[in-house]
Image (cartoon, rainbow, N blue to C red):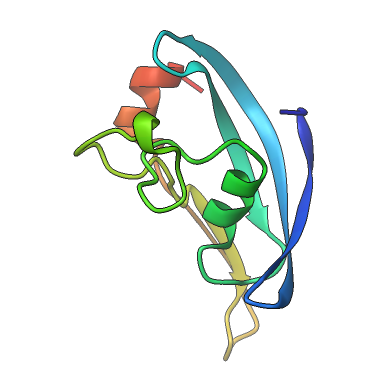
Length: 113
């Protein structure tokens, strides 16, 4: 996986694009390598990020729908987290920026970021 780029494809016969940037890579016995990736959907298709990373050959850890069957984590959930959101409020036109804590289960894999 390159350090950053844009993934483009058709989803439901509509053009879609997602921007990605690899934040950190760690070794894994089971998966060889795990990447912590910052994703930004440039369009808004259903399951866009999950589909793009799967088509790209790097499915999201724990993705039972778009992942690789023998590499699914049973009962661990999907390792996809909306860490930050930024948008214009529809009535006030104010820029809203919301940021959350880094999930503990991500920290167990990637350490402190």
